[in-house]
Length: 360
Ligand SMILES: *Cc1c(COP(=O)(O)O)cnc(C)c1O
Image (cartoon, rainbow, N blue to C red; front, side):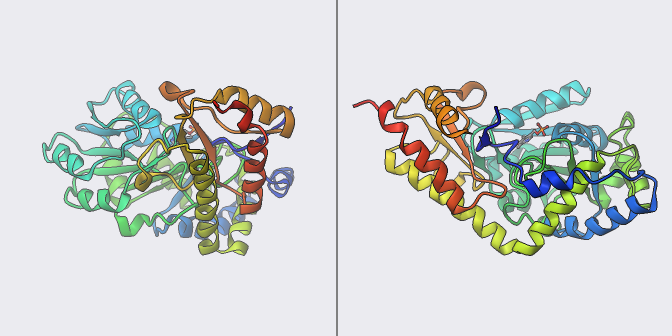
């Protein structure tokens, strides 16, 4: 059974996008492929607000998250950890054999600029990882404030995961001075999973040249070599690149500003709906994500049962919490192609289920 997905990734994919994927393949060394890559590159750069190259990686986001560590860390990496994905990134750094330390915050708290400053001032690190939008807890850190701190440390290469915020709001890579910015395709881009985007500054490329053990598949220098020919190092997931081209058309016809405003409005509709029931957000409102709402289950409803009803009666699903906050929270995504109308449809379905489950 297929459900309309209001989980924070993967999310609902449009018929247009699915259809785009059925176009016949071209060889990845052919002129047609080069033309495809040439066509989408400027649009990708616009979405990242960068002049740096945007590489396409046939992998989920974790591929380039791990790859970034292997490419830029020599001395040590500081992993800012405030949720499931960012905690895991520390583990991944260790598995890559790097010296790593965690800068730990409670789940639902943002990464604190002052604490970041203090940790980097030890001089122990030449790389740092930050997750802009911690999807597991719906927490968005203040990337502007954090990037001001990073600017004080030119020897530290910054790696920022924007997996679940990319294209839903402006994150201006060059202006912020982010070295490595990465995203996946199955979150706000609403493309089936399997493709990741990665943009790398000159400073990060220079660093990579001096780092041993970069491997092959995620080697920045390989990506760059082929980027210069409008190609990818190995056979890419061409069907998803067709989907990407189609999605870029959608974004261009809607307009970036409209796209950002739509995400904000969708987010607000869900947030107010939750408040009306008396649900509280898991993070502080000020640091709450704009691509999903992570509510505390403070009304103690059987959220799994609610979701089962939602699936059974309406063919839709939300998420009942991630990792150690499963069941204690629930998450509703508002990213991708959703509109105020489609969000209201979900919420009105929930309205016909929830009252039975609320404690009298
Ligand atoms: C989904 C997600 C990931 C992991 O993405 P995969 O595509 O499953 O590798 C990493 N970081 C964040 C913030 C995410 O939301």
